[in-house]
Length: 194
Image (cartoon, rainbow, N blue to C red; front, top):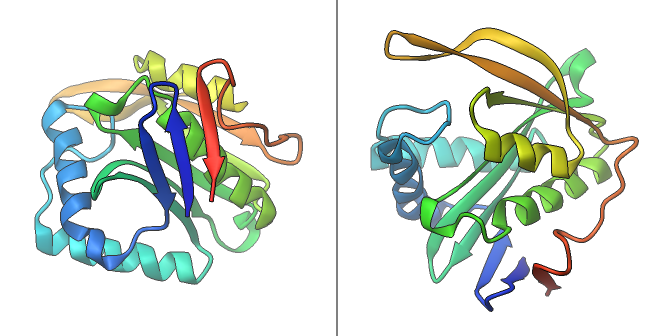
C-alpha cells in the first residue's frame, strides 16, 4: 500500500483491488460511462457483473497476468490503472489502461498511479507496454508522453461510438529504456510511501 499526497494536501491510497471493492468499483466505472469518458466500456455495469469482473482481475493478479492498482480516498475508488500481460511469445508485452473520476482529474493521480504500475511491470520482466488512445483525447496523449510513451501507429476506425468511428493512436513504452522517477514533477505533487 502506498500513500500519494497532492500539492493541495489531499491523500490517496494506492493498492491492489480486493473483493470488498465491488460496489466502489461499480460506482467508479458507471461514473465514467455516464460521463461519456473516452474509454472502451460504453454501458453501465451491474453489481453482479462487477463482482465477477473483480474476481477475474484478482485471480489474474495472483497468477501474474495482470498488474492493477486502485486509488482510494475514504473508501471511494477514484482511479484505476491496469496492465494486462500477453501470453506465450508475446508475454514480454502488456496492454495498459488508466482512468480517473472527473472530479479528481488534474491532481496528478493518473501519472502517479501509472508510474507505480509501470515500475512494477519493469520488475516483473515486462518489456513493452502498449496503449490505444482515442485520437481526440489530448489529456491522455499528453499523459502517455510524460510517461515516456511514443506514438507508433494510427489505428483507423478502431473505436465505434454509435454509428461514428474514431481512430485510435497506438502508443508504446519500451521499459528496457525507461527509468522510473518520482511520480510527478516535485514542484506540483509530493509523493509519500508507507
